[in-house]
Length: 124
Image: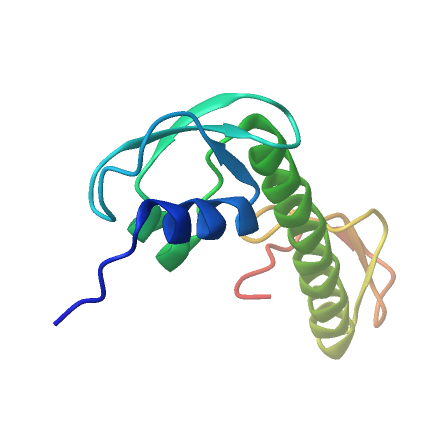
């Protein structure tokens, strides 16, 4: 049987998540009005869902999540570029411009004959 929290216990958990309650605790599966302690944005959340998946509910958390995803996305593109350059060199092509992305034409010079061409990188 699930554990039922008192209002005080639920408020303590909500505070630990970075929010301040505006109304009484309605239950772990019902919407609860709260305010973010950092950016002071009013939000409505379900305590059970916030604890389970930690999705951003307010502006400061959305911005923080977007910045984290942006940084990891840049790292992924850089890793793909490194693999793509390695693959092109394996097939005797030297890139003449930065990696444009998968399935896009890429200006390269053939290391065998010196011809400039635009091969397509597939599956970098």
